[in-house]
Structures are given as C-alpha cells and as structure tokens.
Length: 523
Image (cartoon, rainbow, N blue to C red; front, side, top):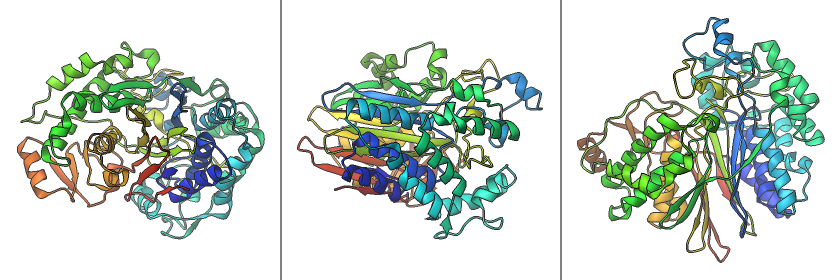
C-alpha cells in the first residue's frame, strides 16, 4: 500500500510494488513522480528525510538535508546590502545544497544491500520522466497557489517561463510540461544520483547557480553526502514511536504525543474541547523546547533523545493547565512539503518527506537544468546571537519530520503530513485518533483539524479550527483563553496528511487527505 498527496505518486509506488519492488524502491519512484506532478510543494532542488524499518531489523533513517554554502556568511549578505534577514525569494535565498537526490541514491543502496532490491534507477524514474515530458493535468492546488504567489514570484529568474502561461497561472486541468526537468531526470537515471553532486550535472548546476547570484558553488555540491542515522525513539504506553533527528523538529512531534501519554488523553472524548485544548497545550510545551534547543545537531547543547525521557515529559505535562490556555507568540512560519508512506508485502515500511520550504522554494528555476531550488536557508538568522544563526556548512532548521510507530500488539504504522508548524500538530491528531482512540486511518485524517500558529499561506498565530468542529467546541476553547480563528470545512492550511497501518496478519488500512489531490493505492 502507498499513500501520497497526489494520486499519480501513489500509483507510481504501486506500479513498482506490482513488479516485485520493495518499499524503498517504491518510494524512490513516488518521490520522483511527485517532484514533477506537485511542483508547488516540492522539487528535485529540495531536501528529504526518511524513516525506514524492516521486520526483525533495527530502525533506520536517511538525512538527505543539504548544508549552507561555504560563501554563505553574514558578510556575504552585507556586501549585497542585506543586513537584517535573508530574503525568502531569489538567488540569495538559494543558499543551501539540495539534498533530496542523494537521499534517493542512499535509499536505492539500502534497498539493494538489505532488501534484495533489483530495479534499476531508470525504472524508478520512468514515470517522473514521462510526466515531465508529456505533461500532467494542473491541480487546483497548483493553479490557486500560483495565482496567490504570482505577484511575489513573477520577476524571480526562471519562474514565469516555467510556471506561468502568458503571464498567468495555468488553469486547473490544463496540461503542464517540464521538458528541461525531464532531460535532467533522464541524465540522473542514466548516470546515477552521484551525477547531481560530483558529475557533469553538478558542473551544470554550479554554473547556473553562480550565474544567477546564489552563493552555492561546485565545492558545496562535492562535499554533500546523504547521512544514515538512527531515528529518535519515544517509549509510548502503546508501543515505540520514531521520528527524525535534528536539524528537524521530529523530537517535537514525539514530545507532544509523549506529554499526552502522561496525561491519559483517552479520558477526554475525541474531538472535544478538552481533547483539542490538551493537544494544543502539549504543542506549546514542545515548541518552547524546540525554539530553545533544536538546531543543527553539531551546534546543540542537549541531546534530543533526552527530551523524550519519561521524567522530562512528566515535568512538561505538569505545566499544562486544564482550565486555561498558555499565552502564545510567534511560530516558525510557512512551509510547503509533501509526506508519503509505503508498506510492502513483506512489512517493510517507509515514512518519507520531501520539501522546498516555502511554496516554489526560492522561486528560481535554473535555465538549462529546469531545477526549482529550495529556500530552506532563509530560516537562518543573520544575528549571531540567535540559535539558528548562519554559518558556512551549517544545516538549517527543518520543520520536516516523517513518523513511524511499532505497536506492542504487532501493528506498524507510517504517518505524516506537510505544513510547517502544523506538522507536529497534525501528526498528533492522526496518532491520537488512530492509536489512542482506535479510529480508522481515513476517519482520523478526514475529521476536522486544528492549527496553532502559522503555516503556509497564514501569518496569524491564532488557534485555527476547521468549521466542521462543533460550534460548542470553538466556544469552549475560546472560554479557556484560546484566540480562535475559523477555517473552511476542508482547508489545505492544516496540511496534507497520510497514514498506513499494517496488522500482524498483513492486512493494510490506509487513509489519504481529502484536502489534497492524493490517494491510497493498494493491491
């Protein structure tokens, strides 16, 4: 079974599984396809993270996050008249290496070494190449977001000629082609993922980035490697839950459900005001820890795993007032991302996330390679006194965090979402509704969701509720001191979630997000 926020990506994964491919191979195919068919959310110019498990083996992960350029210093920006903050858009925002292609390569190697994978990269990228060459129907999500961001991005190098039609957003249902990207994907399929960092493609990318004004150089690409990691682990009363290590906020997602486990959340009715209040207050406690400590692990003063100890979580749980909301300030802000999950017939599980940070990333599209580069590095601060200040070769803070759970009853679950600050909160909703309350994955995802703070397309830090919540829930939350803002019934603001649960018998149950263009595909 595969789940993705665009149906063609889940179908690409399923096709590989039908041909005897394993979960890792299927996810590489899905990752390539979604980079083409959902271009406003991700691209091959972004980063990715993987959490991987095979029955009877240790949990694993892949950190495919790129570091800041060697030239990316406070002085480099000052020389260009930028002293307060790194811009969100343009070549100066494209200051970190795009790591996701290295993650595809690492996944394929793990597949061959540990799972007996045999499918060549050319097969895994075939669907993506086809969709880039022949085109795909434009989703309403792409069309509407392009319209919203047109004025902000139209003058960024490469954006208009790639994503606009006669200066306007493409119409929903019209055919969208990316011939240059298709050529680049063909080159990767022929020469391997290493070509992106140490081959002819790397030479081209470095030349293009330099010419448009990015601080990235060939040496930055040369030094990049995907990193195999041991994910963080939360000992939950129902089993073990896993997520990515820093520089991601994976520890935050685990802390939230760990705090709620301390509070015996099930004593509240699901989707009640008490349920939402405790989830939101647990989020505030975890966010405070994140904003004080979580950064590139080379710069952290505390081990992230220490925040998941029962004693620490119990201490945070005691800070929650069941009768009053804690005041809240600013969050981390917007992010555009995709999450996807695959579980194959042998029980191999992959939870995967791929992103370019803001919608369309830095907005730049390189002229020959057709690569839309991320702006993840605009999350760095130019103030050296802050936690995530800019340094050459430093990894940026990431909101990305793919999740997985192995339950005591033998079930396994992959789950996740897109959406900046909303990622840990939607993960909380999906996990508690499925694991704590026993809801079906589809029901858990389709039910109304909440969002504290900002994410893509939002600038306010209120507690946002989809309008399908009972009016009484909104009134009770307001009475507890939450600043309430109502959203549409099914609002993309709360993210595109997905979930797959595998029972010990091998039966699979999945859920896709009706707020996306996705699907669950299975056979």
